[in-house]
Amino acid sequence: MASKITITKNGPIHVQGDFEICDPNGNTFDLGGKDAWLCRCGQSEKKPFCDGKHKACGFVSEVSAEKR
Ligand code: FES
Image (cartoon, rainbow, N blue to C red; front, side):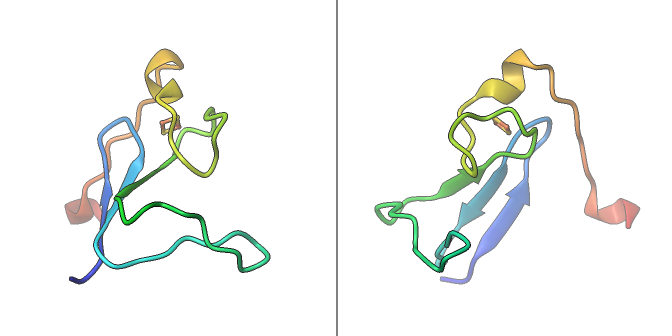
């Protein structure tokens, strides 16, 4: 399955499909074969992953591919 990356409305980046996420040293995060939700608001305490803080901080960002 190809990878799919979705920028959610007022929330994280949702990564699906065949992918891996590595730290700066090349070590791979163990995602257990699951989707990843990457923080986009900068408030997560589990970066690079979303921990839901975007809701409490009132993060607002709605993007559209049509606006490029
Ligand atoms: S996007 Fe969810 S905590 Fe940042």
